[in-house]
Image (cartoon, rainbow, N blue to C red; front, side):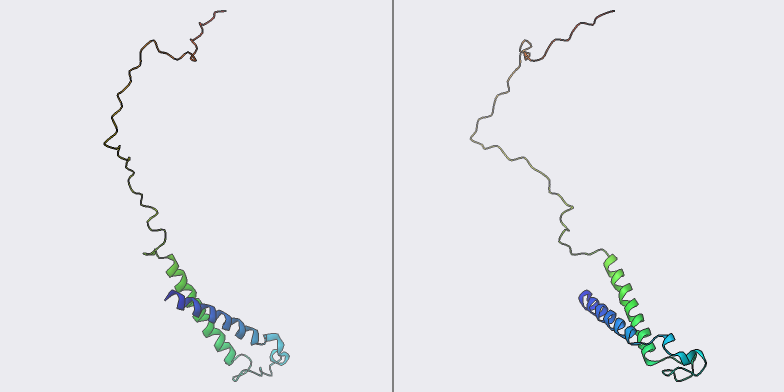
Length: 127
């Protein structure tokens, strides 16, 4: 559905460009400004519209409808996505220790086994 609508939107936009470029401007007919009537209009200078004007209006309406529909569809949350499972993380489990390996006995630290690299605090000096 989305692909068909996008193809229709592109075709209508190209058709709209072609129809607008085929039309002649209002200033192209100098006689229309003096009241002699336009060569393309049936009902006089201010009256009816030409066939190209009707085509332009209908193409513009179809273009706007497809634009609004595509914008509405793209704003809806999608149920299928390639990133749908990225937000869910599996719980991390620690690997089990092999049963044949003996358990390591905890080592006890003695109070006199302070590392030698730690310096003793310096006494405070008074002035």
